[in-house]
Image (cartoon, rainbow, N blue to C red; front, side):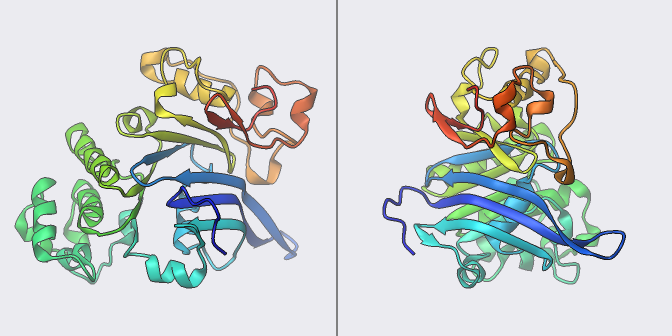
Length: 308
């Protein structure tokens, strides 16, 4: 099924994911962890995805790549270049046209030399060596194995895989932890270069401050859904250009913005409130917030809030 108006490299539409589990009486049940999640990625742009742990950021990456656990079920649609991304297409594109820079260094094969892993099936030795030089990895690193790497070295190796890749869509899942500021900025600079070459980049991160240096758009996740998609330029001043109360609170919690905390915590998947998932913590809550909240366009962005 081809999209009629295909302006996006990747489009995720109303994605919901649940896990099959068993309760204390061994009855099978499904635990929803992502619901009605929507994002769009254009060529030439970086979409930063931010949110606290458990908000669904990494699960989205795994859904796009088709590597969700076997006990999961999903609904919704994912389009790649206007075509439905079926499991067969995911397998074909994974590691070639869609590349992952994973969050965990456990993704490295413990039985394969580092250089061979970074090169993959299509990468050249020259490209791999250039990437290592760029990230301060000695040439002998290519003959080492994952257990011989420090945490920082392993992180730089993972970033190198994206540099060597010829992918059109790069999903970077927390690519900078373990890197000092200089190397972190160098990694983000490379992702910016990828986008400027006409590729699409999804940058999944907790560090919104760092992401704003390179991102074009920012999607904010909360409790398993998209609550706002804003231009990176909207994150300025006191957050007056932002649309959702949680996004504003997230921005105002940055050190340079006063480190202002908000009460409460993100709800667990099994205890989501009715209507707006942020309503228990929202200072603007009213009766309408108990109703289902669709995502809508407001002032050049998208937001899931009745009062925006």
